[in-house]
Image (cartoon, rainbow, N blue to C red; front, side, top):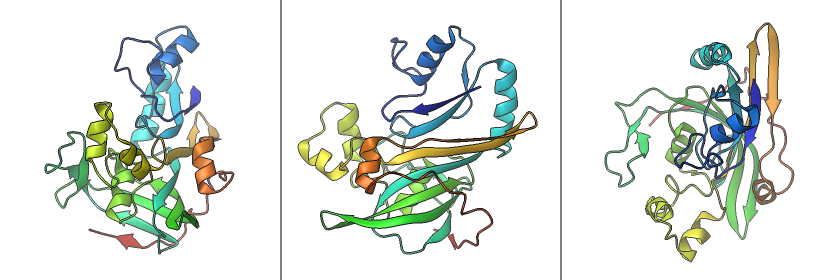
Length: 243
């Protein structure tokens, strides 16, 4: 296997013919063959750890680990506002946002698929008289855009999020390459502040753990070097928040 620290702004699968335009294209160039398979995926703007299988056999084994929740994932996030609780679990089902102009947007809805996200506050800080929180986030389930939706649902959207942030129309202007100066000022950061910081799992009779720090822009905004994602949430009591 390979474990790659994907930069923000790079898609996992190709949308263009350029072999450098996607993570899997670059992986296969590196391997010198077409056998590489992404075991997990991240949104274009989410940075961090992606697990790559070098063969179909490994892809099958690691894929089963993902499906059985045998791979623990932890993310770093920076959100708007001071998060009140130090530690809690968001329990809110997710489904398609039928009222949105953004086709790929989902939302919290009562008839959606079950989804849980565990959250722990690392730090609360201010920038230009505005309040922010740095979080360690652990998705218990694996729904599309889960962390981004859950945090926005709690009134703490991720900094820089073009879909679930201050105005979803920013995303439409982004894909049409017509974002304004005002849009960029609202977003603050170039990409949304969500980073897959830690992967841990047991595979082939061995325990594996990988960590990676986010970009310099992410770390600088958070106020210094980002810590390795701690395992302090293991076994800790949490509070559930339902819609």
